[in-house]
Length: 384
Image (cartoon, rainbow, N blue to C red):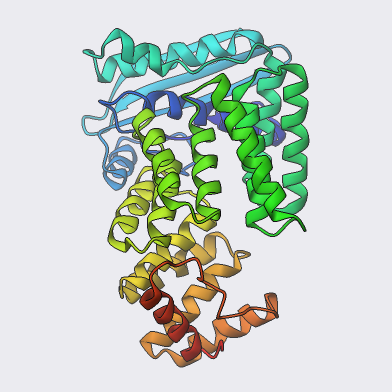
């Protein structure tokens, strides 16, 4: 599925088209007979050859693309479903409604696309595709804005996201998604060191995730938050239970597979971690820097050093400010004997993390031999 283009004429509305894209992907992913893959390509594709190439690169046959035009109190959503192998448009439609009817628009797109691809879906499966709706459209808009802010991974954007989710909950106190994403914001505060009280933030993350699940037991974001909270508390079996629940709800949810890979990595089940994380990136190549770091580290720990370097060098270009990518690259370069590259990465780490401690980095690894191998690579890079 390609991101729906924002045609409102205002880049500030990107969050709205991105949020609608994400919600439709999640809804389609609930159909067990469909595998939904997202891509970071941003422009509609009109050329048949280009469509076929994109489909081949994603390993899919069908492409869903569209656009969103928002003006005053109305929204127009155009979408089409293309058989990229045949170069034919299977279905296209334009929906124009008052903004308060946006949920009906999303439901219609989801059902029509899924119906074309999987005519034999049961009525129950169709119902599961329809996400629960908040009672207040303003709350939905605030959550979309908050989700967009979270993806910018900074302390200030995290603060803005929390404020937006809290405003959404004041408008709709029973909005499960707002609680779930607020929990993710608190988790990010602890995970990225944006608080002096990480344990308190993890407790708040868990509290909000559980509140979301009490309102909507099928909320994927809440299950993911609980998984990551359990991993942070070294409760990896509980983390894996939550990822299993999330993947059962939506087999095409990239972040759920990534969360599973996260837990498997730290318990030392490296081959399984690689499989889960590679699945995650095959479903969505634009996952966050922390997920990329975990896949790179898994490659490193499996002695697939060239794969680790190739993957992390690409990810470093995509997320240049994420320093832990440089840490694993330094270790991989050190093990490969690429002394100058290893020194360069080590200097970058020391510059940005002057208190970096090789003894504690990777200390969450349960397998002592794997932790020793990581420490060895860092020492070869001059980080000791």
